[in-house]
Image (cartoon, rainbow, N blue to C red; front, side, top):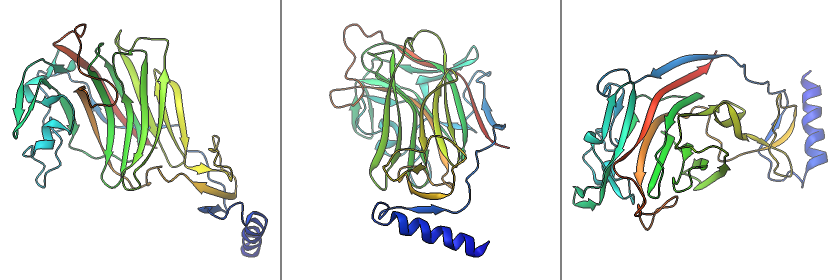
Length: 293
């Protein structure tokens, strides 16, 4: 068996040298499909009367002690809002992230709006992430559901400029490489009309983005010699490139849900216009996170 494997490796290298000069890996053994079964490891139903602060903070906890004592912690760079605790409400079984037209200042930074966000205290590994929520409609609203990694990754389950409520975006970032993969999705449904379930499945082989159980985009860790993604499993023995933006298997991520307000410099939307209804809100019904059995 040892000599057969060595022979296979030699043959692949001999036949493919040049074509695969920049190949990343040789698979000697088949990479099997991940099992379909999931185990629930975290859930949040927002059934109480206030946010569970043992599970969530309402700022970006990127100071050394995890507190909100930095400018970025509640402004998040170039958005048009400051994130305030008073803009995060839990009642009637849902979380409300409320955008208000009120001038506010944080660490000397003045913004025209306030809004709300939550950031998980707990970190999670590979798994299935589901969020059921309803988005606001109108120019200036930039809701986002995303995962931020401890080492290098950012996984955007949802970003949307809500002046186009039938369109949203998903992305995978590697901040060390300063590279990303991105996909824009056009829908028949209006995301501001009723609740929808946004899902991301992340395992060893694939990342799948879904809405209401429909797969919108699948990204594979393995690519063939032409750079095309390997879209099926199992992955048979052979020579493959590895997608450099694909998260490391040991990456740990925190879940973030926020309602950003746009301005002249933001990417997905701009400042609220005369037709934008304010105050307004992003409403989250529940969050469920699973891992493979």
